[in-house]
View (cartoon, rainbow, N blue to C red):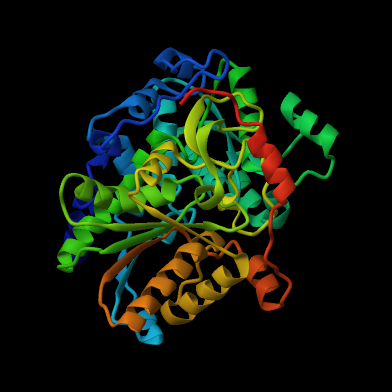
Length: 454
């Protein structure tokens, strides 16, 4: 009886709406532009790629958007995800800070990505679209869409960044186990992939290249849509289920964060945990320190240019104003594949430009060291991406110790590292190194930014 009551209570705590930060922005986002005309995109322009339900969310300025019941039905498998107080880490660091982490590794794929894969698959299913193409870096997004495709009976084709395809064979196996196809990108399947291979037969690939291939295939087939795992407004919207749950859980603990930290590649993980709290601040609530942590080898927020750019290297997607390293930028093959993207979500870039968040960049080795320090205290081995957030949290907690200040620090442990043990094996054996992108290549990529007013 007690187990049944507990289940009902937990189920009731799954949010019924997502939070849309567009409603509270102090200044509106710059519009997305059509890649050919450079005019603001219309819903009709997006229809070849996305279902109508997603398009409406992408352009919406409503604060709360209802989560469909079929989506909540699937969410029930792992939501609400747990929020933990990291007391053993606090003790290990001898810090007066109160450290909390939301643990998204309890999802079926071990990360936060199903939070948006499930609704995107649902909206395509509801519109009668039988097939979706997508890209993936580390494989967490591809795994999530493969799962979602199985849930709603959709065919899924995933272009996986080549270096990750070779580094992470178990992620490929996971996708294929759910019936999805997984292709190393760049590939011979698309005209864009063939053009990349013609210039560089040994290309490691990039998320920009993989997106280009997935979009090319989607626009050429009437039965196919495209799904993106980060960056766009609707993706960040879906991820806010994480932060909304965390708000209620922290209220149960009679606490509220002074600082919220998340690793940041395209931006969905950061937005998911930060936006509900930042929305409070934007509406006149408590001040919030929001810290986005990224890899120094792909420093979009810390070193990128805030400008209009394409979301893909094939230059097929709409242009958005974002922090970017240039759509042609190919980052080195560090293990946090989910953070190897040339651009940042327009909403996050906009808030960064307005001064509402701080960005930090760390090297690969110091992030792995932080991840192991966390694991040895808390018993969870983080994904390489999440290690960046852990490094930021440890730095903040040690600063509290140094200055004798107590504050509440919240971060999103966005996924476990159970599929990434080869990376840890390499690290422990001393076979990993800090990787730096070519300054020349970075300059060339930025020199190719499109000429757009604003």
